[in-house]
Amino acid sequence: MPKKVLIANRGEIALRVIRACRELGMATVAVHSTADVDALHVRFADQSVCIGPPPATASYLNMGAIISAAEVTGADSVHPGYGFLAENDEFAEVCERCGLQFIGPRAELMRMMGDKVRARRAMSEAGVPILPGSGVLESERDVHAAAETIGYPLIIKAAAGGGGRGMKIVEGPDSLLRLWATARSEAKAAFNNPSVYFERYVRKPRHIEIQVIADVHGNVVHLGDRECSIQRRHQKLLEEAPSVALGPEARARLGEIAVKAVRAIGYTSVGTLEFLMDEAGRCYFMEMNTRIQVEHTVTEMVTGIDLVQEQLRVAAGEPLSFAQEDVVLRGHAIECRINAEDPRSFAPSPGKLSALHLPGGFGVRVDSALYSGYVVPPHYDSLIAKLVVHGPSRDAAIARLRRVLAEFVVEGIRTNLELFQRIVEFEDFAAGRLDTAFLERLP
Image (cartoon, rainbow, N blue to C red; front, side, top):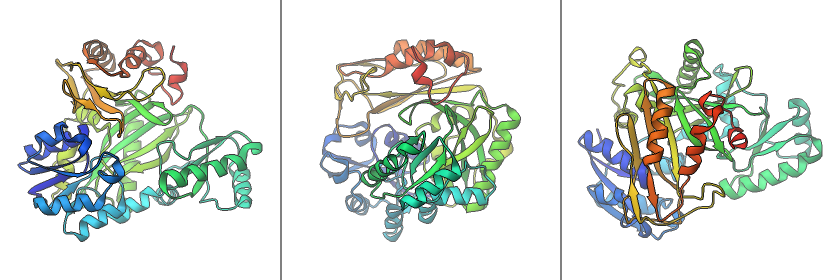
């Protein structure tokens, strides 16, 4: 097992890893930019190292500075969290070359699943349903041929990334070449790779994902599903487990498909297979995330399994501490991503917190690095807290969520708490009528 873990991240996920390490008896090292000198992950780690100025490219994305911090503190492993370098195969390789254990999958697996075209091919070979699509499209001739084969509407996606960047919906041939060129430019700017591909577009799908974990001894387990359909510009806002769209048989079947796929590629560590569900209830593979997810919390709440601790054990070569038959989903959990942003314009709202009250009570969890007087910096993602509730049923979880949203007080900056208060009162949410166009219907 690792003796000292450097967390190459910040904010709530850095705190989450510190807590998991501490319970396993591992020392921790926090890295931080000059903007985060007063951050909680810096205060709560056993050691901390400043790795650069505020811009992420000069600090949290600076591989050399992070490796140097590990060397000077005597860290023997690195946990990347999510975002930043978490799915960077080059970083994983650099860690290994420097004698540091990377808490995640092997670099070649990250590379394969990070390339969406290769990932689609690998999943198809493993028997996972995929939407009709294309390979990387380099010429106008290929573009026209692929569009004719797939049909309209279709969606253009970046082969090297996600999060909605480089993504365009094409309704017909008139806009095909223009949107293809635009998508290539956006993909180049976002991922330094202009490669894009086509996929048949599913209107108003549900976004369903399966959490998996695998060890080096051949044990692979899925931990049920999550519903992540409430999104803004392809960025998730609210997640819940399990999805109301899947019954026990469909859930088991999708879980078995995910396990089969993970075995086929020889994957180890935690991972998430994401699917689109059409109106007929058919699920198609979309992508695989080779890291711990923001929304891992709802899976932990319904399974009682600490995913970060299991991730640490698996990285150390230990077998999973549970088998598939030990995974039992109990009740329902919902997570809201609380962001420092205007609830209507979604403009970022950095600044100093003048007052803070975090909600509590039975079945409530708040993962956050906030404290009264903390200054939310303008340099990073606007996520400042994850509010998670659990109840014996979905209705009970929604009632609890209504209560805790009214208790959550943040003053000095704007947040999207108001948006979630509107969501929980919307009849479509209570009825489980969810899809990726949900916010468009929200009064």
